[in-house]
Image (cartoon, rainbow, N blue to C red):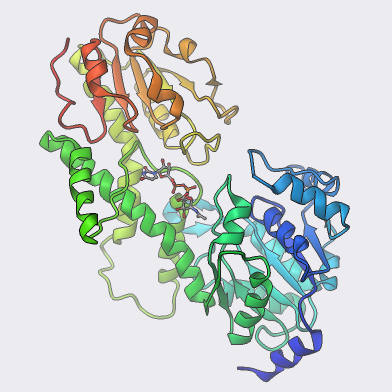
Length: 476
Ligand code: SAJ
């Protein structure tokens, strides 16, 4: 370990003042927990004064939370630390000179997943602002989900260029990926174990000092920065893979005329013997901003790594194939819809489809990368009229979203369930059929929320993902 960084950290003493760059759904709760800790004297929240997000500065300094949705405990915590004078939000990045540790929690979306090029523009801007203002002995921590190799590569280069200092000698550098879920941000930050990956051992130790003070149940898990980057991207890649596995199984069960949920229960029964198979749930697709991109971060990481990957260059990885399977599920929903219409000798052109569910997650208003959009586009291309219902999502660019289920179902030839919102498990067959005005409406269940028999008895054409046992039923 380089002694110089140890001397610099020793000269600086324990971390007392912290900066958090990026007042988003990760940065805000992090900053509040640091500010609430008795171990720390003061926290600066750094936010660009941009047209889209600049409002957060004033909102936070009034002691209010700019985040949408319910986050237990966050409103009160913001009010408390602001009143105590332990937190202040600013767009003046020169205040970074005033802190002992600075974390960056900035979004890293992909411009286009297929080309594996992440959009690092916001992260790069943040790194430049940090690099220009850090001094000897400062700890810099990246919390964003990044391509493996970014901390030791791009981030280190920018910080060294802007500061004129050296990572691992003059300043400490680490990656501590966020693992929070909307709706339980503070709880996750306090209770989840925190992966802490340093550029070198001294950086890892300094980052452990920073995060250990805000953990209650969770503990820190030290490793290298690269290992931390791979851990974060792989944990979502493997979840996406598990979902793809059961989606593929659902397609097989449909082709073989059996119920995927019987198979799922059968496999799950082994768990008593401690022989577990993590069989997740098949569905109409995978949305959100985690699983839809983290596989491509991992893929890019291995592609740009120094060592050569021993794998056939002309074959997609298992992980990318999993992404294709999950991205195919809205197409499969479309194919089920076409098959349903053929049962009653109709075509989609000129027909009406009621699309139930725009959020990517049940009982949520989050519609980022929703699988419903692909399905809607396929229907529009086929000449169908599409009306979208969602009880939670209020707005979405260029898509009208109604909260009036009756209005959306009126005159619909097809009712397609895309999100497993609780509201949809109570839809009543006879009532919906009456509103649709058709003798044999088609119902396509993408989330296994309705009972097939109830709708088949009521005269519907039923199609369900994984329901090979019901998809060719007799028409009543
Ligand atoms: N999905 C399925 N079948 C399943 C589970 C999910 O089709 O069995 C679909 C969902 O409908 C959704 C998508 O996958 O469209 C993603 O669902 P998700 O439950 O993974 O929710 P996310 O995308 O918010 O994932 C986040 C991740 N958390 C972080 O990155 C910090 C993920 O690591 C967590 O496992 C997940 O939350 C969680 O378990 O809540």
